[in-house]
Amino acid sequence: MNVLRVGIILGGISSEREVSLNSGRNVYDNLDRERYELVPIFMDGGGRLWVIPWQLVSQNTTTDIADHLEKEARCISYEGLRDEIDFAFISLHGKYGDDGCIQGLLEILGIPYTGPGVLASALGMDKDAQQKILKAAGIDVPESVTVTEDEWLRDEEAVRKKVEDAFSIPFVVKPIREGSSMGVTIVRDPAMLERAMAAAFAWDRIALVEEYLEGTEFSCIVLEKEEGPSILGVTEIHPQSDFYSYDDKYMPGRCSKFTPPRTITADVVDRIREEVVKAFVTLGFRSYGRIDGFVLTDGRVLITDPNSSSGMAPSSFFFEQAAEAGMLPSMILSELIEISLRIHGEKKGPLQ
Ligand SMILES: Nc1ncnc2c1ncn2[C@@H]1O[C@H](COP(=O)(O)OP(=O)(O)OP(=O)(O)O)[C@@H](O)[C@H]1O
Ligand SMILES: [Mg+2]
Image (cartoon, rainbow, N blue to C red; front, side, top):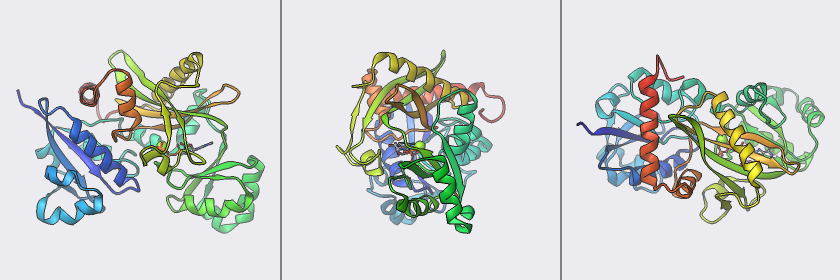
């Protein structure tokens, strides 16, 4: 029997390329070498693909890797990817990575991959579109308004009025398509609006302004089992910063996380399970996802951030929840590959 060649695609073009490197390196370290042949594939800042030797996977930063590419790696064409791998483990995050772009390329090449298809991946990235769809399906989401960069540049005062008519202080400003809390600001004073808009527009041409949610944040990994999607676990998050910031996410020891939850009660966990699975299905997510939300002080469960992929660093929700469910990293990674192969085996046209 031929061993499945699994390409671990890491790096990429987005703001989250270092997060991607951490994820990809950990996936590489933990995938079962008896079941799979591992092929690390680095996407450089220009979108080119390189087959890299294992020594480069352990570099600290994507810049360190980029410095060694010409001498130690092999640049391949997109079409050439077919000759290298049978399956793509997408460890890219953010724009071009889990927003439908790489998924579209892999569909054209006929290479099965982790995570959902083009449309659902794009919805997982677009915070305005996902909220509209979830809301239409009766799922509780934060109230929000969008502000385009043009609108802001044309008339700041009009935008200020639009935002202040919709929300009282504090409220949240974020770029419509980002991850890892890039460009997110909790506006606690009207004087902060300008800085918050600039932070969001550094990443995208549309900003999303949301009501500020008071409560407890949670995150759930969802796996699409044969009998249907179900959550792996619920993690309760207590950030050390003002909110769950980039540093809280990735600096070891910065943030307290509890799997299973510490203060969220069992009946609320049941509601979280229902809402999260409903959100997964509503957005057309496939294979797996990471869906975040809040339990408000009045007990309401809101879905705030459905992600069509998950960080996979050692301390990620993905591996924490797997451990709590009794699965070693290699076991959950194998399961994810098998789930993805099954759904790609059943598809008619690109994965829906
Ligand atoms: N409406 C809100 N009310 C209160 N806090 C919020 C709100 N929106 C975002 N936050 C805080 O900001 C963090 C980042 O926001 P969000 O989840 O939208 O960003 P993201 O960049 O998509 O994150 P991820 O890396 O999880 O994909 C949240 O984890 C939360 O702590
Ligand atoms: Mg997100």
